[in-house]
Length: 94
Image (cartoon, rainbow, N blue to C red; front, side):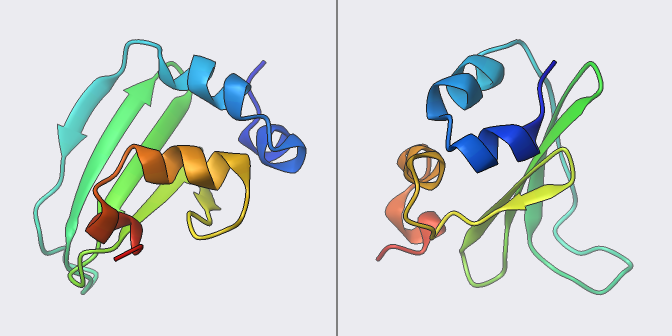
């Protein structure tokens, strides 16, 4: 069974890659929500899992998997893998 908390704790990037290679239902959100935050969000769903990639108004992307926010600026294999999937400006590395 997939557990993002376990994968983060072990910094198991290969397990995350395998998980993300599955078929996902994909949708996007409007750029402004009633809650007051702006930006755009890509939502990917499969079974009981959800990946959200939010592009903030400042252009930086944040990644959340199963309600766990991933620190994409961390010095971990998982963070480097997620940054490798994004343009440099979205990863905050410019």
